Amino acid sequence: MIGVKNLTFSYGKDKQVLHGLNFTVNDGEIFGFLGPNGSGKSTTQKILTGILKGHGGTVSLFGQDITAVRTQDFFQQIGVLFEFPYLYANLSAIDNLKYFSSFYPKEQVQKPEELLERLEFKQDFLKKPVSSYSKGMRQRVSMARALISNPRLLFLDEPISGLDPSGAVLFRKIIQEERKKGTTVFVTTHNMTDADLLCDRVAFISNGNIVALDSPKNLKERNSNRHVTVEYLFQGKQEMRSIEASELAGILPFPYDEIVSIHSQEPTLEDIFIQYTGRGLD
Amino acid sequence: MRGSFFALLKKDFRLMVSSKFFLLAIGSLILYSCYINLVYVKVDQEIFPVYLYDPEQVQENISADVISVYSPEELQNACEDGYSIGIDASKGTPRIIIASCGISRLDEMRHSYALSKLSSGNSRKAKIIGPNDKEMKNRREITAEFLFFELAAVGFLGLASMLFKEKQMGVIRVHAVLSVQKGAFILSKLILILFADLLFAALLTLCNLGVSAGVEVLPKVLVQAGILSMIMAMAGFFFSITLPDFKQFSLLYLVLAVFITTPVFLAGQTGVEMSWIKFHPMYHLFAAMKNAYFQAPVKNGFYYAGCLMSIFLLFLLARYGLDREMKREG
Image 1 (cartoon, helix red, strand yellow):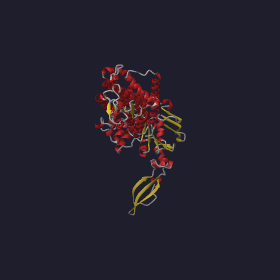
Image 2 (cartoon, chains in turn green, red):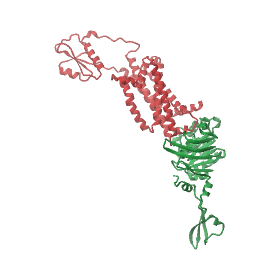
Image 3 (cartoon, chains in turn cyan, orange):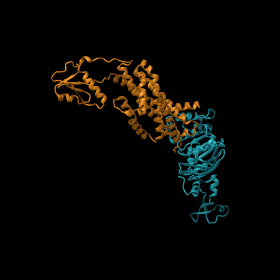
Image 4 (cartoon, helix red, strand yellow):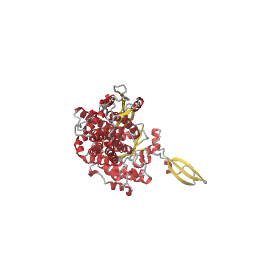
């Protein structure tokens, strides 16, 4: 679906922000693009969505070079959720969706009411202006805007931001449902939980370079020290010891009266990111 | 494609309504019409008062409205306002005393007028040339001026207020990933402002010139109103898309009002002489508007070519500004 080879980009002569990115995104895949602010995430997404021109290297979408596909048809096949919920504040959710859907062929467009119901939008706010909505409600309408055209390729920038925990669960579910329908999803985030729970593969970007690319599971396995921490009671005292995971298969190599808990010491995606880049994501 | 453009028009119309654009235009229309009909057409400036000091009663055929004074000091005091004129006839030959008003041509006119008052038999009523009596001349003149200043401000500010709202809401960036052409995004706003301005021009003309005279000048007035409206709307679009916030835009508007509109007003409405004003593009728009109200359309092809070129260049600039805004970081 997406093929990026040796992608470079500079703002002006001396400000190169992308230094030869290489990655592919397969059809129906949820691909996470993770990096801190200023790492080149947004620039990459802007190139992929056809907003920024003048890049180096090759970028192909839907099997064609982006310079050739940046047409009306291209924009009708993609859906973009921005980091902030950009909506007309003087219009209602329904009117916003009707307006944005008018740029797609009628047969391609979903019904705004049904889409908002799927996103658990409060029905009594349907016809009220967006200016009266909470951040979470605006985010739901923005997601509906991105999905309204049944896009083949969905770009999501921080999709879960501004949502309460139940909203976050709902959005993850909807993204998974979209993938099941065959939609390819490109998620830009610095939320590790989202990336871990949602993405089939993730790429870590730092200072305009991809420093790691794999599935979250593989990344964690590859970077794990394969140790577990065992908490236990011995002679009335609670103690803790770190052992190799393989040692759990046999008799534990220390005396104990009772095992209280066993914790995996598998690193989080954030730990791995720091390991690769020497810096955190925030 | 047509459906998308209609959606843009509908959205922009709703934005205009929510920004109280029409309310302001109706308010201006009522205010201007009330001022023209209730105040301006009744205003008649008093002609220069003429004072005569003639202790020996040498002047015999003086006009009845000449005011006699009885000392040189009194004559001096009466003429100090830069408007009244004094005649000192104490030494036989009348000597004109005037405090200059600053405009040499007007001073010369005052001088001649004062001399004419020394012979009462010369008073004749001026012949009215053409279809305009004094009231109609006043109506045409002030309507042209109000329309010019209203369009210069409304086209500029009206579009800017709409665009700043869209910038503030961030929705312009959403249009970067929609199959909407940038030109269409600009054109929909331009068409609405143009339509609103033309409607305003027609109503203002009909309300203040009357139906018969209004209909007569309307085609020429609408052409000039259309040109001015498009130029100002495009300029408003470019500056509002380029400048980061409304505060800076307001400052720019002040600068434009001072350096662009004020000289045009001074040159067109007062006797202040500015030889360079013919190089001021807005002055030609102002003159064309005034001429349209007096049924004397501009026949100079360069004027129309210049206007078309300006609209085209401003459109390109607006498109460039829009493109830049779409790429901007959130």
